[in-house]
Image (cartoon, rainbow, N blue to C red; front, side, top):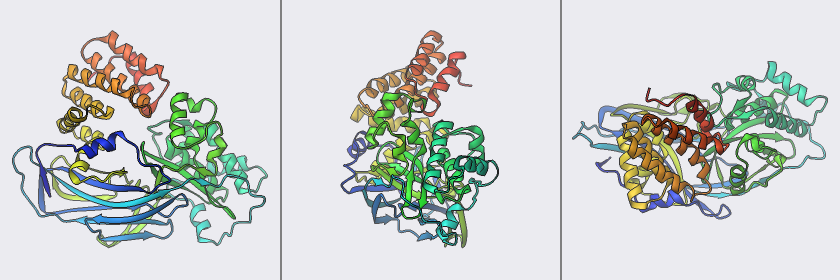
Length: 489
């Protein structure tokens, strides 16, 4: 247990926020952190139970696990999916609420070393042996599962795409092409997450693109699964794999593949090309991502509908997705009882740096900022962002979060100043500049609307639209408030 009255960020945190990892051809040190934050008191029967997948064996990575802190209850196995799950259980000493503002944090973490490599499996085999339908792998990954329907209109479409062909490699390629041509990418995803609903919506995020691709493949007997990964920089992602006899598992990424088509999936072409280039993906060939996968990623979960026996609960637990677990799992991959306060918790990866708990705590306020905002803890984020911004004067996201904090508090001129600072810094960070700028201008528009400066507000929303980038619905948000002013209601 540690008490902090003032949030501080160490220099190591600034380094993580502004630099990328070492080249993926060299081993990269990583740490997964899970933090329970903003605790004011702990009851006598308090308990935290957290489940998180460990990086699995996969063709494009070698992972060596290091120390765990605290020691886990167990490392569990899901033999059918190949996932390993760490179960952590914490029963802290109880304590009563202290002076106002006295907050406590609890930490779980494990360390690892990653050696990542690209996967190159593209190329049609001369002949494909028949599937052994009694093989447990084939049975597992052609079965219908919750969220992965394989009958009705899903199967009808897949059969139509397959035609008279019986070659699973070519059929999978046709399904891949259909997804690229017929789905619209939405960063926030469609409302529903099962394959049939995605087929009806014809839109979604990376997980939904891959879910529909997997369901279509399974419906015609091609083993397929989704995979969750985190980039060594730039957030998390979901792609797919199909199993071809004689070739093994082939990576398939319909979301990034769509960005390689003409028009870049409707997103800003220069920004898309820069992002793909950073990930080592050659431009101009959408077929490259049918059978190949770049490095600079860590696969964190294989498949969905993961089953394991919890020694603490004494029963089986089933989670539809984990990504890799805890508060990111569906349903929840945690149990928290007896922790008092406006508790915020979540997990994140850090690559290339070794942080102590103080630095990890500060980084949590950046990575989990939206959860603090949801709980109404604006001042908590404000303290962290002010400290980081004053010390390092860099980090666009620091200034965005600080501006959002002021905006929530009604301090609109301070919010404007913070967003303008973020706008200046965004131009110095080519990887993230446009993703940041579309929302900076939207937030500035909100400020001006709340200040009664409608003309200035409209100019900011119009500036967002010039980027032709709908990251997390930014363009739709701008159009909405071009039609009518933003209000706090």
